[in-house]
Image 1 (tube, rainbow, N blue to C red):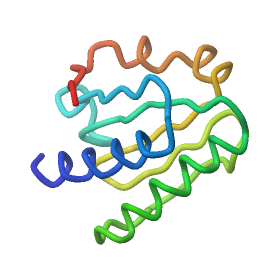
Image 2 (image 1 turned 180 degrees about the vertical axis):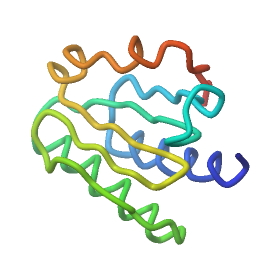
Image 3 (image 1 turned 90 degrees about the horizontal axis):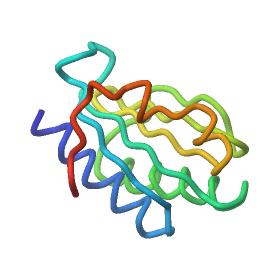
Image 4 (image 1 turned 90 degrees about the vertical axis):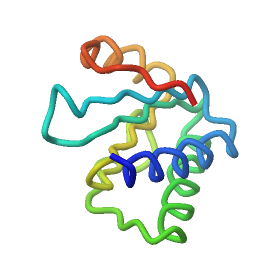
Length: 112
């Protein structure tokens, strides 16, 4: 979990640097095997969503963490899988629609 928390800090700061909104970190390690943590954030436009995604990828790569898979590109939802940590970047409407905080409500929110 120590490596996951390092990844969380890097991704969280990358999102905050580009003014990501309502950034949430959920510890899902006790309820799922797919990852230790989810990070959920949103932007206000397609271009901001893409800027958030690009900054996370840049900072994670510089720290030596490899993107295993990415779903989506801009638009309403981009999922970035770094193994122990999965980053979800939405536009506002997509975030409200998918409501991952509710879906993964059994996870424990981590305050950064």
